[in-house]
Image (tube, rainbow over all chains, first blue to last red; front, side, top):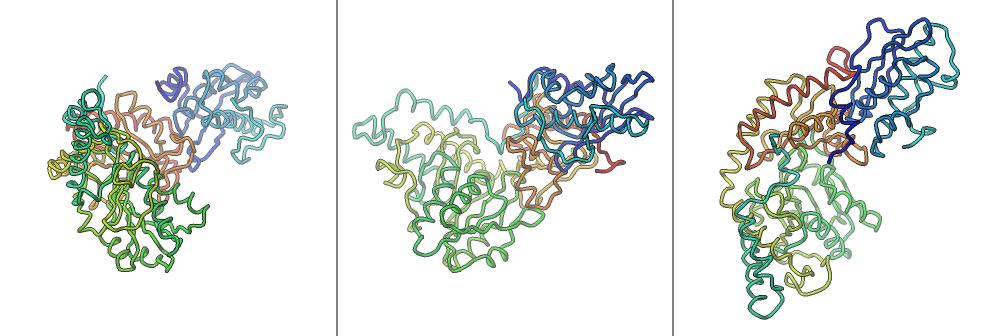
Length: 148
Length: 389
């Protein structure tokens, strides 16, 4: 018996891709300590727009850390366009489910990825369909996100 | 795996002596205390004995103690019962922002039914200012309810002063003593308390049983209606084994009080010292001079409480947290908020409560694990001393 399922616990206890990439191609931070969760994601992108590495640092609860770990794992090896298709729902599914009050942790991870990609796009003068209408400074609310 | 329970303010294990006393009342002396044959009368005398044991712990007369289902019922009874009994006199209740939800949510309910409630602020150390209490009194005030010991930060409130102020103004005074019972020397008559809520499972007794102290003559309406149990004040067939267990736990608490306070607070102080020595960037919340002997409420900067709780749990260590992320409502601790602690620090707050079965060796184990856990989470965290919040 625990708060979370085995997959979430495994990613929380042994998180993948913890850290910060030096000279990243994109860096995004989302959330705030006041809300109890803040994620930073750094990415490395190669010439063919493929994410070759992603690392995270997260202030937050068990599911925030597990979501960050899973999210970074999911985007490594994907192209930017593919990574932008990752939804918070997919993060939840890969984690085998999150308790309803913790769904926002997956939203945070999804947003943090988009923030990092947005930063990459800005720095490299690129535009992506998946970033249309995305505002990295938008308030953290769950409207418009798929609930688990 | 090694198990270290450090959440004695949540609940306590039932002591062997208590359990042994209770067992015959399930299978042998199971009579209804209202029945008039020997089996019933024997049960009834067990209830009387337990009532005496509880009364003795708090300096009350036996007929001032009424058994309830626990602290929450006693709190509800007091608020609803006094509001009803004194509705001709007034409709104002004064309490504090740091009360248990059993008080706060009952007050919120009463507010929907025409009662005005003042929620007093507290000082940064978690104590109520008696002057602020006096200033809040109006000619409509019928009840003042201030907890004896806060459940999160362990602060012992100035109950004698507050009760004296209530008395001076002719207002009834209630205290939720769920955390104080068995941890602080309580004499209800000397303190001038009119109503007091108590719970058995915080003093090594069983769950689902508690009591209320009602000073002889203090006006209060009944809350649970039905049969003639508890001198027609609280209906419902008695939780016989529970009452017997609570009585025994109260007797032990009284017998061992001085030793309990001394040994538990010594261990708690050792724990806090060790944490301070081993882990940087921590804050101990709440007044250290007037404090529950077992309480250590500690903020670990740059990390979040639920993560600490989960990793401690993976090492067999049980604690609780004021972090919002661990609660279903996602709102951070109202107690720490009322003390003016910044929200980001509240998220990183853990409550350790030590009790009679905690050993020095347990403390050493917890500190060793805690040190590694805090370091690990700080490594993962996106905030740090260098980066700041």
